[in-house]
Length: 207
Image 1 (spheres, helix red, strand yellow):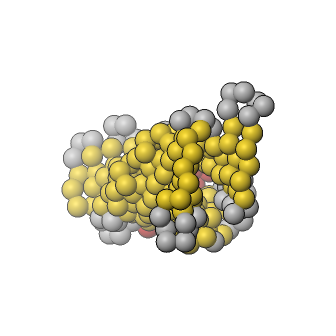
Image 2 (cartoon, helix red, strand yellow; image 1 turned 60 degrees about the vertical axis):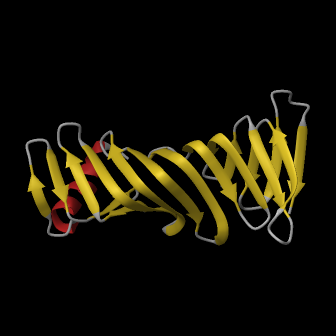
């Protein structure tokens, strides 16, 4: 999304859409009661919405600092992911979103899928998401965890070495555990593929 489009969509919204508003304004910090922001693509499609009941705008660094953030990411004008976090910030000309503290991502079409992490970073112009620190994916049958992971537009989560993989039994207890190098989980097909630097090492599991 280029700078011109951001000026069109973001600035008017801050004037009209932020609930009435400014509680306190200092030289560099402007506090906002509640923030409801929409960001669109060049083609006019909604890319995401950002909601926060407690927001401040750092005018010196051109950064929004948000508390109790809820972000909805859209694909084909439908909600694809919902992300909640205790804190977040939007910076670099409203291009980078960084969520921290109790970050939780859910897929809208699979209620039992949940992805947790300490930090979630997304460049809005790119389709990949970076997750850092205590990354954990869990559903009714498996748990995958690592320190670092990426999520792409095809709903593939790549977990980076070292990876811990747990299969649950019917009582939701651990029945099988694997330690591996990289692992790839496809949220559409519910399959896990394990890999390593040695391209000959490949394992695929279905559920």
